[in-house]
Length: 248
Image (cartoon, rainbow, N blue to C red):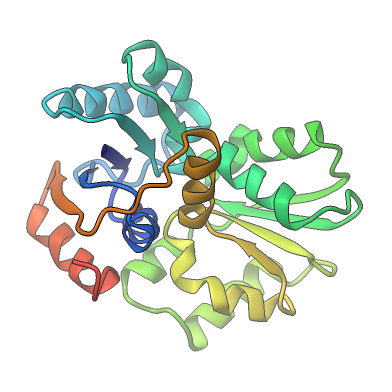
């Protein structure tokens, strides 16, 4: 089974990491739109247009499923992508909400959603959680985490100051949805800052979703992975070597 993974940049590598750890595919084609990253500050029409262009790129490959690792694309462009291909297209929002539902049963729990401005402005997470009867949802755009992670800062004073900036007025949080694929790299620090709140990781949520909804239970001994980028593919490959250390 072959999967395409699409992200606006390098963040989707955290989803790839979960896929590799679980050996779900024999081949993964990764495309990061690094020339036009970040998507999180762009409007819906632009995100849809870029996403459809990425879909055209993937049509050069024989893939069985398209995994949209980008939360902004998952928020705004899934319907358009599905209308333009015959293969299944899955995003991180539906899988993330399902993962939270599996971990947090109490509808009175305090749920925090963090992500880019585009993801939070779409209100997709909050609406999906409201539909499941969760009552206490706080959504915060935390875009500064993205460049911090890309600078290789996963702990320390800068990250702590940024968390204080975003989280200083929060009440007790029971669970936090990491609504950007960069955020799993600072997952432990976020959880610790929020008094050991449960975290929902897009990559792990996608894996569970694939197993449940698409019966992806085969274990492939080896996964062949190809990396492509719209700009500076060598940088993407270098980041992959660091973030996917021991899996390539």
